[in-house]
Image (cartoon, rainbow, N blue to C red; front, top):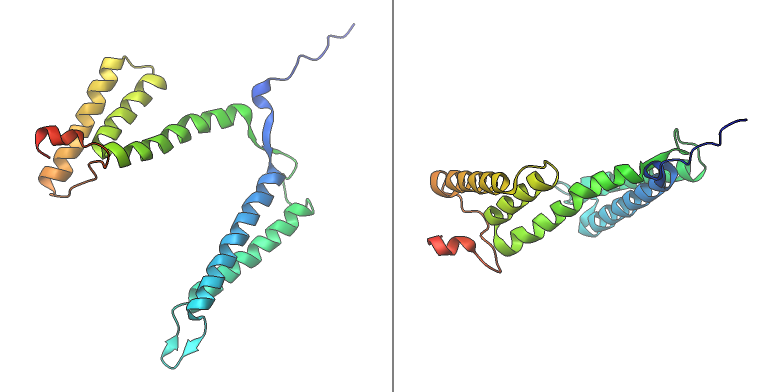
Length: 176
């Protein structure tokens, strides 16, 4: 008597197929190429008395991108690309990517509100605790130490001020 096949791991289920991603990316690149070509055409995509106008080269670059995208779109639509039946990303892989992408997007927002130094210290400490499994006090200490080192390097030594935050500037407590 044969054993029934074990249920497949739900982490290996395809979230998006390769063909779908080829169609999506080709469509986005087509829109981008057409936008570049149109804007360049409005700017002037022909020759003037003294040479090409400002939109000449960008127009043709946009046109090349658009034509290439149409070819890719047609190949994907007709299912004539290699690996078109495979998975683009599986559930487990997508979770790993999102574990980095979503906190990075939040980091960019926090930079706007609290500045690069405070946001970087928090971001680094959270990643150390969450993904690196470090003790919270070690992560906080290292996050603060790295932010202080970067602050000293840019603000004091190079005299290049970096963004301090629009909502609240924690460095205002120290006169910066």
